[in-house]
Length: 328
Ligand code: GYE
Image (cartoon, rainbow, N blue to C red; front, side, top):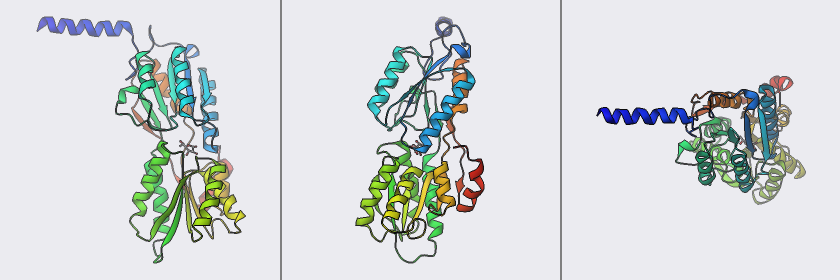
C-alpha cells in the first residue's frame, strides 16, 4: 500500500514538474504563468458572413489589443478545411492557446487531438463542436442557441394565439451543419408545435448571408405565395428577405411578418422601421470573456467548461429605445 501511494505521489510530482498543459483544464505553459505580453493566441474565425460576425471579430481584436496579448487571426471564409489548416498552423507555431468558432459541428476530433497531443489548450467561442470527448477543449463560451429558437417560437406562438386559420411559415436556415442553425431550428420547432395551425411550409439555408437570404426568399415566395411569416436564423438573412419581399411588391412586416436572431444595428433599424417584427438577441461581444478564460488557463486555473452569454429580445418599441446606444 505504502509503495502504491509512493508511486502515485511520484507520478503527481512528475506531472507538476513537467508543467504539461493538459488540454483539459490546461495548466500554464512550462515555468508557470507567462507575462501577458509574451502570450500568443491563435484564433480561427468562421469568416465575415454577417454583421454579427464583423462585430464579433472587432470585439475580439479590440479585447486582445487592450489586454496586450498577441493575436494571430485567420478568416476561414466559412470553409471547415480552411479552419482546420489554420488550427494546424497554430499548432506548428506552438501558440499558447488556440481559440476558434467552429463553422460546423462535426469533423473536429482529429485536429483537436493534434492540439491536445501538442499540449495546446483549445477554447471554443460562439459555436460548439459535436464531439463526445469533452477533454478536447477547456471551455465553450457562447449563446444558448436552442433557447434563442424557443424565444423566436414563443413570439410566433403568442402572435397567432387566436388564429384559427393555418399560418404558413418559411424558415431561412443558417449554414448547414452549424450549431446555431441546428439549434435555432430545434428550439423554434419545439415551441410552435404547441399550435397545429403553425406550419413551416419551406425551410432552406441562406448560409447566414444577406445575399443568401434574398435569393432563397425570392425562390420560396414563388412556390409559397400564401406565406405569412419568415423566421430567419439571423438578421442578415432577414434583411435579404426584406429586399426580396419589397421586390415582389409586398410590404415586409405587414404582408409578411419577419422574426430574426442577432440584433445587430441594421436588424434593429429594420425592426424600428417596422420591417422586422421581433428580434431575439445573440451577443457577439465575447472578447472580454475570452481574455478572462485565456488568463485563467495561463495561470494554471480551470475555467468554467460552459459559459453562456446573457441575452434579451426586442420588440419594435424596445428597438427604438435601444438603437441610439447600440454598439454594433
Ligand atoms: O447568429 C450569425 C453568424 O454563430 C451566433 O453566426 C453565430 C451566428 C450568428 O453568421 O449572424
